[in-house]
Image (tube, rainbow, N blue to C red; front, side, top):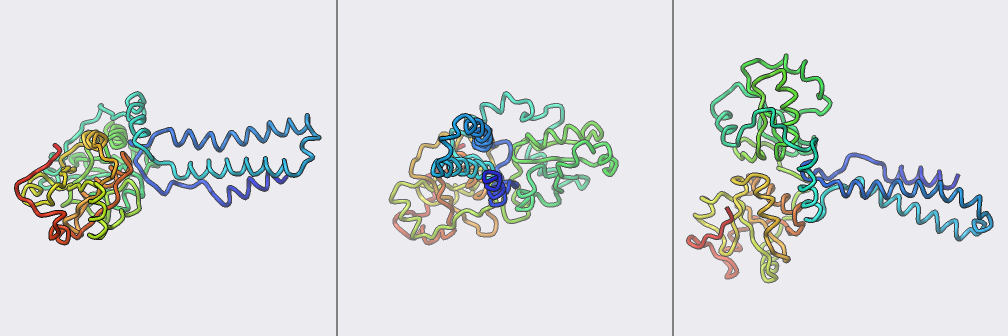
Amino acid sequence: MIILLCFIFIFVLFPIHKASAVPPPEIVSSFSVFFSQILIFIPIFLIGFLAILKKIFKIIFEFTFLKIFIIIILLSSLTIGIYVFNKREINSQAELACYIENRKKENNLRKDRTVKSVSLEELKNWLNNDNKIKIFDARLKEEYEAGHLKGAEYWDKSWASQENEIHKTIDKDVKVIFYCTEGVRSSQFAAFLNKYHEQTYYLDDWPIIQEYWEGDMYVYNIKYPKILKAGKVKKYLKRGVVLLDPRKKEKYAKNHIENSVNIPIADLKFGEATDLITGMQNDNGFILICYDKTDNIECQTLYYLIKYVKGNCHGWFFEVEKLASDNLGLFNYSTVQSYD
């Protein structure tokens, strides 16, 4: 009875709910979920095992101290397991590397090549010149609410298997485009609808189109990055932190902070960006430079990608002019350090 009451207490205190962190399934490893399941279900097995032992060694379990100790161990394991399950997300470069390798072998996490794909440039062209377009956002609800392409509708996962009815609401000459983070989920949903609507495509890239973006953020996590002041940035620079400039190469070439590294995130595909960040060697961490307080989707995207790949991005800062007026960093129009 005591153990049963403790179970009820734990599940009331830590109810299983949708994870607050929202890394897309493309970059979620199975390790943390597997680990949490072990922590949750092994104690349940142990309870049954201990019940048998109690029958066998009844005298041992007469000691109250031992009972309390066993209950504490079980509850601690359950608490940690439930917490890890709720907070499941990538926490290390090793997990991401392991997942990317395993993902290639899993049929349910591969892009569906039976449906046509479009590039980012093609989608931009359609948005600029074609009014007969319908866009679906195939990411998580939290990601969609934080920011999405203008006019895009959230593709509710409960709509799966209802494509035969959904296509009847779409004119035949309308182009339907699905997008997500990398193209895995969007290709799978598009493939089902494509059976009924021929002009169905998926975006084979991540949707970084600033002029067609609405909402606060492009996210892997619904929490905002830490905003750093110029003074804090200067202290970090003395420790060897690297400044990253995520703008396009053309903008970076015109003006930038000296010794900052250009990673033109909008010109890189998901895999290219992931490989690039994985290969960057700097144990002191990174800081993102944001030149525009109102339009910084490139900074947001690069920040969260670094967070999940390496986990050592300290935040971003907007006071570029204060840093540029100091000897630690000057606007430089000739020296260009860029990763392609």
